[in-house]
Length: 167
Ligand code: GDP
Ligand code: MG
Image 1 (cartoon, rainbow, N blue to C red):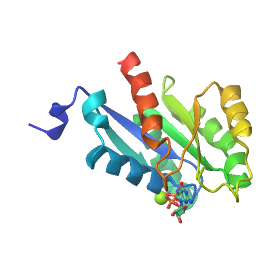
Image 2: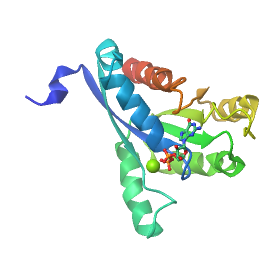
Image 3: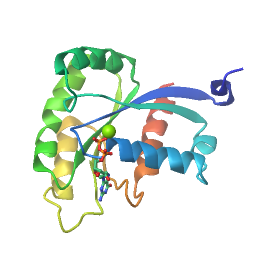
């Protein structure tokens, strides 16, 4: 029997956003929480297959982009990240959402995350700006920190609840 049969449901989740916003760190933080001491998976009964897309920061862009589009079609949920200390990563969220609407499943669960919330001195994007953008696109929003762990599990939990409703 596969490990997967231990769980009620399994979902594919993809982390998106510009290079260096913290996708890998958020994923590592979530997995550590889930497997070391946390009881997220047991509580929610969901196995997440999370992956990060190799986009925009990768050599051979065009080839990777077409691979990425196949990932989009596969994903049931997308966590879209910017870095609260990087205006360009925030400005690029609109382009990411355009791409999502073009390639993702129509009923995909999307969540916007403003990461690196621990970097208070370097912040350039206010929480309200993130909230406003999320509202404009009708997606939920949270600020997270992969460094301290703030809201990382909560973000996945919110996505899990949304997915479970639809399953
Ligand atoms: P990715 O390219 O989106 O996968 O970004 P990474 O996860 O590799 O992170 C890029 C850089 O940002 C690394 O130096 C991380 O240590 C740092 N970083 C990621 N998340 C956070 C965070 O929440 N807070 C702080 N202070 N640094 C972070
Ligand atoms: Mg990465």
